[in-house]
Length: 219
Image (cartoon, rainbow, N blue to C red; front, side, top):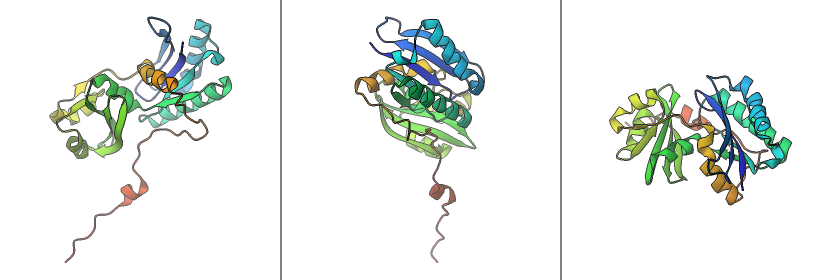
């Protein structure tokens, strides 16, 4: 039996869920955090679902958090809360990429998951099954080149419109519960994250990339 508290506050809506793998329907409780209200609603929502189910932190196999990429504020809020709950309960922590969760809806084979990052850039992940081949912050042109001919999954209208030439499949925005399969796999292998060093998955460009200038042509 595995029991998980799952948290995702990366997108336009946040969510928390409790899952018990011993049950035919693993979802024990779930709550949506409307809009971008995670900073005020997350901890009370966790308390409500835990109390309504009669669970204590010590009953958990792990605290699971989707740690980006996405809203900077949302990612920070979710990750900080997950770290605190993991420490308070003395239970392991598992962090899952939002791109991995999105790509999981693309079926077998190589899947390209894309999220809008603003300013004409996109969070891009290339996955085979649950295995990550690459994650990066790319321009629209770079995404088109990287994902040409493959299955492309998006969950936002803006990304779907910008990448229309790739004929992306538009799916619902991932929620906390969608990370369960990854959590089970990681917990079974005892692959947990160290809260002391775990950082958010922001996928920002490095300073070298930001400030790099094209070389002048040799005359």
